[in-house]
Image (tube, one colour):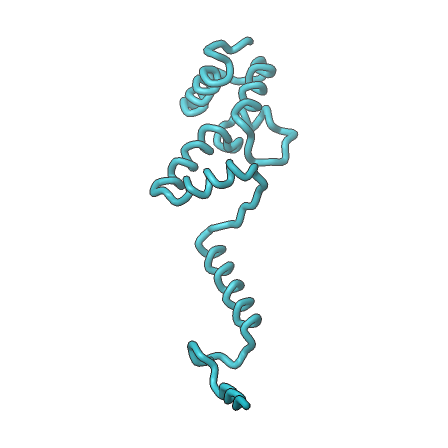
Length: 142
């Protein structure tokens, strides 16, 4: 006849330092992390991608300098409307503060008669030159 094994009276691992149950500890820790992220200006952005693309993106995010490259790409692809006075006038009926470069090019091209070229800031002239090169293949049909 075999003798029964004695019941363990103590748990292995780290001693319990917090009286709250483990799920409650995790909830509090996640909330604290979200608060720290918000204070640092970080926001969670989720979107669905094909599996192969998502794997490539995860790998790219692990490389040093990825955030700078992403910022450079977004600066070229998405334009802040408020920075450019003529574009702001052309976007009078849009609620969003950002516009895709292709859409901005189309607005400039379709509504060129409303663009004040005499008082246009140099930054906006440079933006139009970049948009014409990228989306108009060097031609602005006005």
